Image 1 (cartoon, helix red, strand yellow):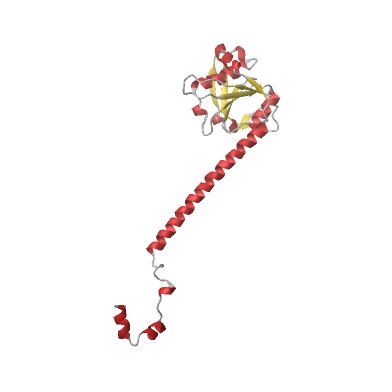
Image 2: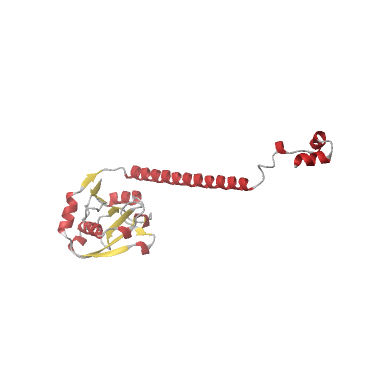
Length: 217
């Protein structure tokens, strides 16, 4: 089971974003395992809290998160921390691909591959209207996370294959064009066997060199 939230942007041109989180640390294990490359992970720093994920559009990064959406995420993760909910806290966030899970770690515990990719933001006491708005959009669903990730990766592979095929097609067209230009500039089309005249052919056709020269001219 996963909780999903659909926060609305604050402008007429702002797209909706998908925020989701697990019910407990066991569900967090699946979210860690099956997160997508364009998901961003949020957690209260140094305290127990929910694992909150923000799903960005593909080919975007944490730098592209709108300020109001970032505020939604940090307030939601803070509201779902037993200790952090009662005080000002720091919230850390990083791309899902930066989460490191070792066999020795406890359930729901994660580390990072690169600490430089971890951002931190100070969060004051909870802003109730933000959390209340998010909770009104909350849905409790039971997705097949493994199947969803497999479908995403299959789509990525298909897109990559399409790009590779397009590149190969363009390269072949360029090679064919270059060869056509090379042939046009050469004398290959002139030096054809059916246009060649041998010495024996000349002797049979002409009685003397003078006759050949006269015909040639």
